[in-house]
Length: 244
Image 1 (tube, rainbow, N blue to C red):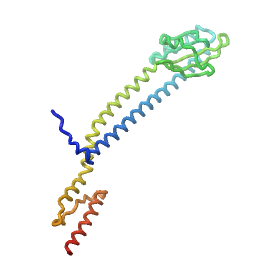
Image 2 (image 1 turned 90 degrees about the vertical axis):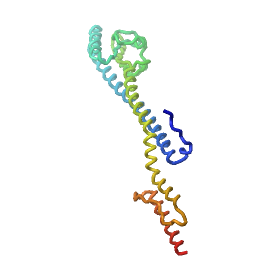
Image 3 (image 1 turned 135 degrees about the vertical axis):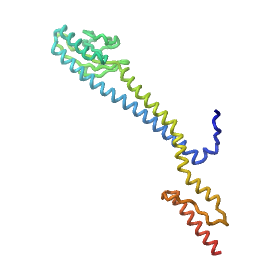
Image 4 (image 1 turned 60 degrees about the vertical axis):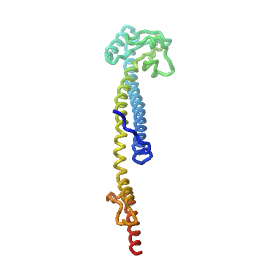
C-alpha cells in the first residue's frame, strides 16, 4: 500500500507544526529520562552492592581474626563463608601484604588472585578490576604481618540487571515515540478547530452580510476573547453602516 503524499504546505500550518513540536519534546524528555534512569539505577545497585560487600568482608575478617593463627581453622572458616554465599557467586581471597595467596575460593578469578593489594594505607578499600569488584579489609596478624581479606563478585550480574531494565524502558520509550505523532495530530486538530471555524466564518463575511458573527464556544479562553472582540467590532461596523 503506497504511503499517502505529504503536502509540504501542511508543515507550514499550525496544525502541521504542533505534532512535530510535541514529538520533539517527548523524544527529548524520553531520552533524558532513560539516561537518568540508567545512571540512577546503576549507581544505586553499585552502592547497595558495595555496602553488602563491605559488611560481608567485615564479617569474614572477624571470623578469621578469631581463628588466627590456626591457618587450617581460618581456611575452614573461609570455606564455610564461601558456602553460605554460594548462590551469589561471590569469591573470597586471603593474601599477605606482598600479594602472596594464602587461600582463595574456587570462584576467585586469576586476575584477582594475581592483583596485589592497592591503597594499603587504608584498612578498607573498594576496588574494581576489569569486570570484578571486591571489598578489601586488612587484618593485623602478629606472626605473618598484615593480611588482607577480599570479598567480591563479577559486576556482569549488576550490569545485566541494568541492561534488562533498560531494554524494557527503551521499548516503552519507542512505543511512546511512535504514538506521540498520532496523539499530537489529534491534539492539534482539537486545538486548531476553533481557529478553523473562525477563519471559515471570517471568509464568509461580506459588506452586504454584516450579520454573521464569529463562533463563541463559551470556554473563556483566548480564542473566545478574540471572537468576542471581533464580534464587537463587527457590531460597531454594522451599526455605523445602518446609520449611514
